[in-house]
Length: 304
Ligand code: CP
Ligand code: NVA
Image (cartoon, helix red, strand yellow):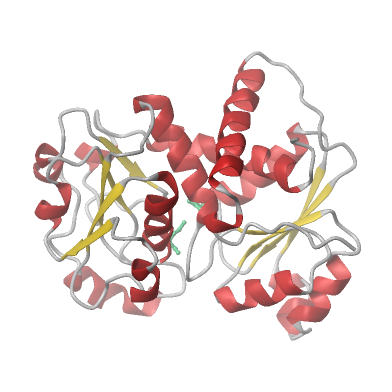
């Protein structure tokens, strides 16, 4: 049996393949705007395993499958045997004999990797503690739609050096942009991921240094899912890392602002920024739908 293609990190697709997925996403977006049906995934079933909460990821995958003529099944550990201790490998063997493709939002990246190793069908990373590659497909498409190619541009990451930051570091290498990462001491990204970035990444503790002349400023929550007991400490440690109008004034005049959402106004971003002229967060959220439809088509071999 041929080994399935997975999407566990951006590196699982070549730059050419990522380009095809983004181009197809634009095509699917335009077709939907014209009211045209695209039924490329009829009779295909997506299994969706969510160990953590989700609004955008769940709805974009489920709506995307329905729009392409397929079906999606929401699987929560609360009501499957996975949550009662059935081994990950066994669950992967069984589910992948029943559905055509699987997406997983997992606490531990290693669990996703183990699942994929035992799956007969493609597995998509829908966020782990390590990275969030699906979000980057949407973010890259959103930048291109508003400003053209991101290659050679400067992106500022302000906040926690966690899963979203890791995916931005990987994207810097794959899409060819410079990345300035500003985190408080003790919240920097994984050095192994930084080391793979071929010198595209600059680390600082000063958000002003990161944002100076940036074409795009990006942030994320200070307390990610699973870190709730650290909320108070994080609020103290991240004081000064709120993306506000003063920081955006240091960026280029045509700079954009992105946030994967959910957002906390007054914490990691001021309302004046996320609801202001720089912000493209609603387009960014919508593009989760179009990019993941294209990704599903690609992994299922429908996109030649
Ligand atoms: N950005 C994102 O993944 O949102 P959800 O947690 O709502 O899926
Ligand atoms: N860093 C956030 C991203 C949510 C989409 C989290 O892991 O909760």
